[in-house]
Image 1 (cartoon, rainbow, N blue to C red):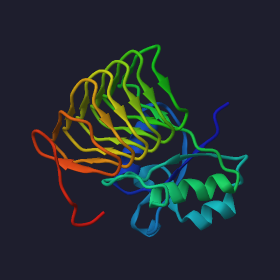
Image 2 (image 1 turned 90 degrees about the vertical axis):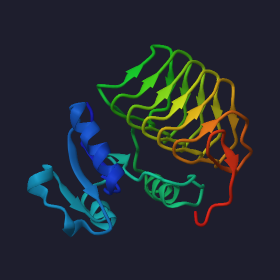
Image 3 (image 1 turned 180 degrees about the horizontal axis):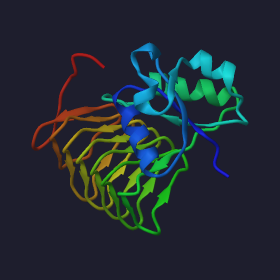
Image 4 (image 1 turned 180 degrees about the vertical axis):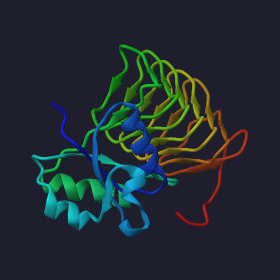
Length: 218
């Protein structure tokens, strides 16, 4: 029997997570936020509380967690999403993922339990998706792609076949990555870019064709 879900982080991505869980018939018990008072429980159907309140109310045996923290930059191992996950895992809590009922997943795709597949996403045969990766709204992942842990494939992004993306990388909204390209770890592909050459670890690229750039902030 599935346990009630608590969403950790309830900003914009957290609300998308909630909608996907509800569409899949999952029971959401609570969500957490840095400013929980800004949410009206009667509109959501569940309460928004602080992380500390969640730890006081619910033991690891009572609930499962879903990460509601998204990213617009590479997800570093010491970044907010990774730190939040590590905190709760260390305390004995278990995370799970989600599969929106309006996504399509090939029968032989291999998905980590904690990854998220959102509305309209397509994963073709041979795709592999790592732990805590996000395949966001209408993203298309073609055959034999490998997506590492904590990656974020943004809304409407398209990965052609045999693309490899290293851990923690961010592929922005509407990007296209052509066949056989390899992105290293903690890369960043700006929205709308067309990637036609391999991208090194930690590199930021943008444009068509995508070229390296130095970000103002990260």
